[in-house]
Image 1 (cartoon, rainbow, N blue to C red):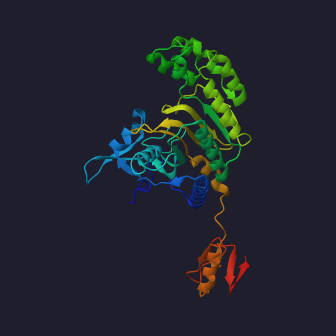
Image 2 (cartoon, rainbow, N blue to C red):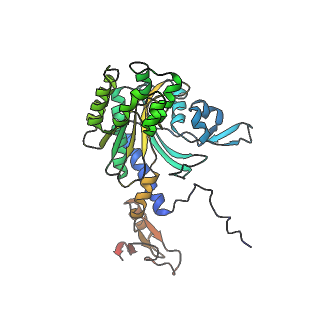
Image 3 (cartoon, helix red, strand yellow):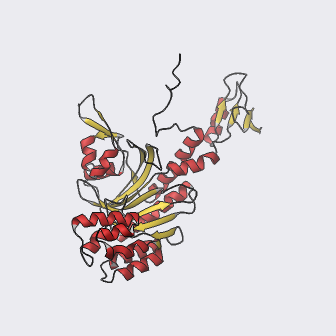
Length: 370
């Protein structure tokens, strides 16, 4: 008796059927074309690396997402990548260590997590992104935000919005006008992420309460943060955000949540999330950081367009195609393919053009619409 479960896929994994696969390929291709046009060169790191190498360049908490197994050749532990960014950092620090800086690299590929999350059980994702290595200046941050927006525009996203944050905000204030111990900083960051006023006071962070209400549309939120920062320790960061905002003005809605830290544990002074209308959750994130292992500064972003693919796949056009009857002129068919037509050749008299989804039939040397 056939086992009815033998063809089930593991939880969090799925097949991409033709329309979904076509949407994914189109979106990836559109984004990569934009990245290339901005001067970013593509790299293709392997899907699997030694676990120790990947872990050494990742934050300690991130390694728990990796799927591990033993290499039968070396008997060392291997891991499926859960993030391509760290692999690009390794490439920059090794094979491209002597390349001129700033170094512009881009990538696209699948990543795998050992578990999904409650709101997104998917374990395999497409990750597409770019890294600007050797600088974390305001100009670099502005270029990366502009590039992320341009990438999503090319992919067909509409109603794009960008949410800025300052990942090192608590440390900057705690080192200056609002002192906190190292232990208290972690708790204050967590309570700010949760927007929990009571927990914030209990953690000794009463002075940080105004930050909970500083989030909102960028101009107003930046003004509120300036009012809170009476000592002026954030002036340079706020000025930098205004420069970035001017660079992308009119292309996206801009918001600002200065104390958001969840997901930005390894960014330095600047971070952002990017969203689009009709797509659940964030499509990507980016910011400034230091490459694990080499400590070189960098600015970059990663997009995870799976939800954009889901939103677009139903309307994805596969192309009608030209039906080639038995005995057709192969040279003429090749000419039509060279012009960009999709051809479907009959393999028997039973094959039917309409059933096979074709919009035209090759009749002699001419196309005849169905």
